[in-house]
Image: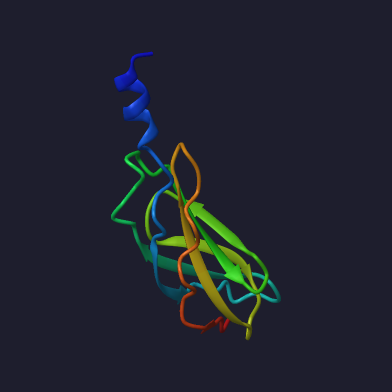
Amino acid sequence: MSLFGIIASSDKSVPDAPTIGTATNVGSGRAYNNGRADVTFTAPTYTGRLPITSYTITSSPGGFTGTGAASPISVTGLQSNTAYTFTVTATNSVGTSAASAASKQWKLHN
């Protein structure tokens, strides 16, 4: 590998954190742990000089996740009448970004 190849490949990194948006209730209307939220986000400006391959939304509490290629992403398994916040990460071939700041608190009503 040439010196140029080493330098060019060394400036690739994990992306910056995306910016979390809002959650929309898409609850199933069924009992316990069957709720769903569609969560929006904005992609990071800096992608680590590589394409972003996926985004992951994570709920708190519960650690429920949803993964996808673009906004919005669905998170399932949410419990009715529980307050949640969400974070988002971006992943490229080098690794995964830090998590975004948490969303505003959101409550699922089925």
